[in-house]
Length: 423
Ligand SMILES: O=C(O)C[C@H](O)C(=O)O
View 1 (cartoon, rainbow, N blue to C red):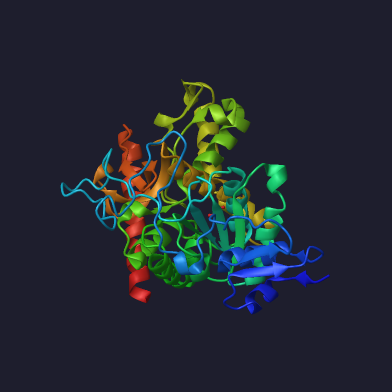
View 2 (cartoon, protein in one colour; view 1 turned 90 degrees about the horizontal axis):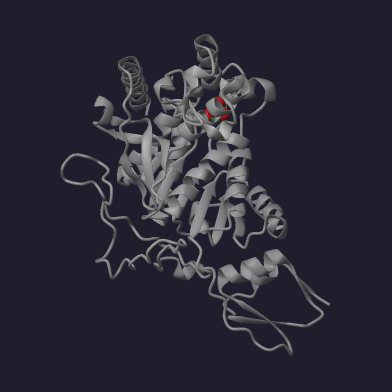
């Protein structure tokens, strides 16, 4: 009996079919490697199976095929739609428009799933993001990328082992580079340094700008039609930076923070007597930091204003605690930062986009003049669709809330100019 490992598959060279003995053992990694290389593993004496079509080989990675989300109209293949997807920026100056044309997906979708998501960074946040994405059983493949290739492969294999438990058929793979991951429909960037107790998110700016800038450029080369979701801190600045480094239209670069900050507010308001967290409607806007704005004019619980259920002082304390929740977790963990809620939030955004139901979520988006803010990435309510941000949604904020939001924009702009000065 021979044990076929991934290295044996690599050593098989240009072989298209590998004949193995019925007594041989082929490891799951070897099978995965074979699929990647387009090699059929055939057991001697067995009836040959038709060639697998679920995963594009590295040579076939530019093949375009549409996302197929149940319940949505079948997208038109890119070629039929008239060549490469153009920027969706409408000429009128409003960046995002309801019903604007959306790019079709680009990856091979063998089992009728929603293509491939690449999650960069196999740390805790990347791990939870991948877990939630796999559990949703929506995508064909989730690929974890990490400079520590063994970690990416190990986490991916561990997650693969939960397929029967979680009830999913999404393939999970781990690799060491963006290039090896192949083209994606969605790319989540979680890579970068996490803050330690006593640090602010802004302390990470220059270290993480170098990492995010490099990754965004490489993602743009490998996945020119993807939507990038940035998770790395400082979030608003890193999303802006990724947008510039990728050269993507702004609707295809979004930052994940508002979903997380909102979820924290919902959880904490629930603990303060606001009813079930999932019945609390609220939205966290502004920056992912000191200038976070949680407009209480928009906060309700089962349709009732939250201000009727929780007294003003307590509610303000809840807002403050939500604003400081990231630091609170960092302080408790002593090493590293939060990952359950951030990973769940990032996956939630990707799933909302892929499902294409026009869900509104707070996200770091390039402001288009709504709320009197423009030319800066900041947390605003955004309608998400398959191709990223469809439109920025304007809420009827109180004057003081609007003022706070504009101040947040000014502060983010200041930090961006400091970043530009040092880079
Ligand atoms: O706060 C951090 O440093 C990580 C993350 O942004 C969070 O809010 O948990």
